Image (cartoon, rainbow, N blue to C red):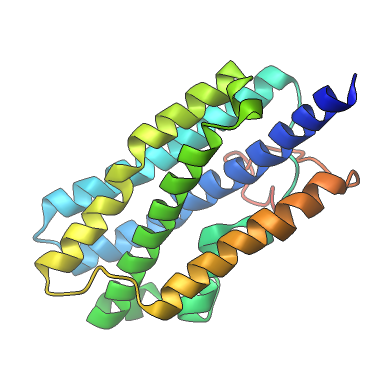
Length: 221
């Protein structure tokens, strides 16, 4: 295998491993969000339905990446929450991990629910911008399977942030990110692109998952 081919293979392997982690983290975390939305907005079935769709799309994306790895004949690299955009964002804004997020407090406090909606909205908008960039990448475009996956993700992304934006506007809340939220999003994105991804790319000792996370909740532990 030539240097160019080896680079391409490793790049796609690392990128897809990070994406499958984030898609799995996304749809499992949205179970908590959906719980909060149903409790906070019981009289808004359309908003609930949009969050249900968001959750379903995230799981669909995860399964597409899983299928891509299955066709490659290998498991994803075992990454952790240091590669998770939403993990870092939740920890920065709420001061705890996603798993420790106090759903009851968010339901009871309109300001906390507003922050949660805005965090999700910013994260999804960042994801949409990143997919647009990736679809122009020659290594991605050289792989028909990944290209199709990212095209599906690109098509789905707008419906993932718009409902939260609409809810905020309808309830007199500002969808405009605060400067601290913008800085947090920028810092997380840059650290992932300039530090985490290159470090994972270079670390040939990173183990692979032994089990699929949808089958084993401790797969990423």
